[in-house]
Image 1 (cartoon, helix red, strand yellow):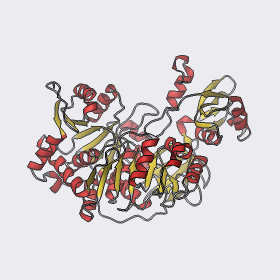
Image 2 (spheres, rainbow, N blue to C red):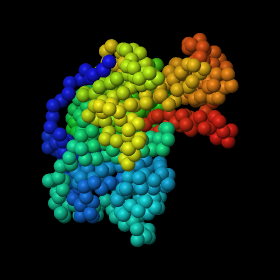
Image 3 (cartoon, rainbow, N blue to C red):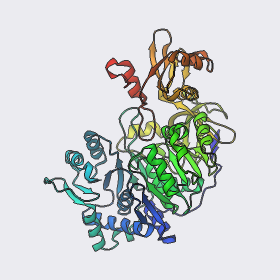
Length: 536
């Protein structure tokens, strides 16, 4: 059985992301495109459109040509948009790097992506210079000025102001006359690496434009919306969901350079944010943090959880805390430009990851037999749609392992769809815990555990067992008063015998990726190595 999207597909001619944003600028040139949450500085759509052209022309002066790669290592600040979209307008590909990445991680990604230009900030310049030199990246462009320190012969270090000036001097350049082709690579995010090493994901301009239009249509984004950018722009969720989709719709993006719950709430109140898209840990903080009661958050119309599954209990807790806002979940992968299923403007049913995005198809396949599952029956989710990646950079074997005949992408996620087409996630295929002949999904047990009032956060991992092979163990961030033994009994009353947790380990926090995905391999390794115990 193949599930299809209930949302209509908009029949529109292809336009790459820079063109979509310039179209929004033509409609409302003085509309605020970007607001810096910390300083309150505003960039209008007309200014953003001009900067896209200046960046494209300035890069061309430096020899940046179609097919070249520009890397950006910076927090969520307004220049991200002009730099990324300008590089795309010049025919280049953009790859994002977390400002929290180590020098070796930055160097490895620059090398893998073959990035010729690295954009960063003054605070990150020392490490960026070393990483760029090791990767043979030829130039570093610094946002906010170049510190007065000695510069070696390679790479060349220049300021963003100099880039814009050279682009202004040469006129619109490639941004005015160049249009990236639909099958040309536009974005090169790297998979989170929760299992194995990160891989470069080739997203074409057609995939990016499709994802942006899918989001804008399903979430009904308009120029009246203000979206708070919490997820990092270096991650596909932040770049597509929080930056490009709102800009293509003519909405205003409020950039948050550094996340804290206090900063998030202050920005929502001050800038009257209407749409908030955040990972599950932030949803939990919104539901339980007392700070929310001290702020006027009445502007919020839609709160969306994405990046990792959120159980029905967590979604309902946020809905109770914000009764004036719709609450929903979305689901996507780096390999699908962050989009597979989406809520509507009215949210989504508790526990559901929304409905399939426009133009998207879903199959649910039994991983053991390969047969298709019926409605409500679990299995591995296979998806197909215009937003799916072209493949992994330079890795045909890995590409063949995930992209099957007919363009179906094997997500590695377990779940099911109901008769209404709502998608429900139950876990990851590679994270299943095999208890005797039974398979236990960590996400299912985590949803149960999060229903306990004294569990602040949790991850379920396998532990070796002589009789059962593996058994589930809960790593719990407790609230005051939690008794681990009583928690084990509480769970036992709510699950089948083979799903019962056998032990509880207390932790200060659950390690996660920037998008909110639990780093199970880190927890599992710590559990097997006494020296790698979770901080407590």
